[in-house]
Length: 127
Image (cartoon, rainbow, N blue to C red; front, side, top):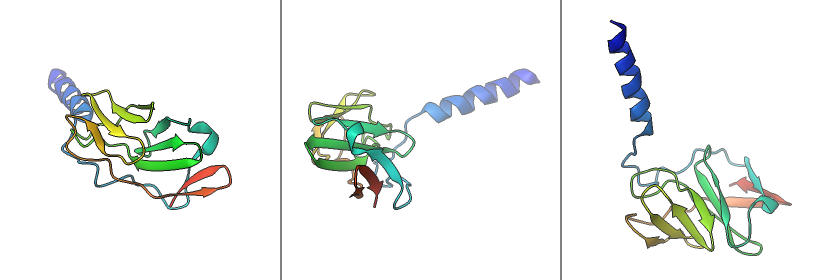
């Protein structure tokens, strides 16, 4: 009796780890005005991945901040890092331009969707 429930729990846990067909277009669910990060937390030429918010914020050149959905368009998993002007998804090797969100390496099927942000002093806010 309990082995059936254990198997159900394992199946549910595995389902939570599976990728989806999400293309990232649904975008993050963050309230307008919510503080996402401080400008000082986003390195020039790099960026940060906000996993809870499903947003990646980049700073391609000093003072130029961009934001995109952090959902890779390949299988709906989250991108993993931003380095040297490229957003990386280590799950299957996709990469994106940190300025535009355009695909620079597959198997991603399309660009990362832009996310509107605003600045308030040193704070980066959801628009």
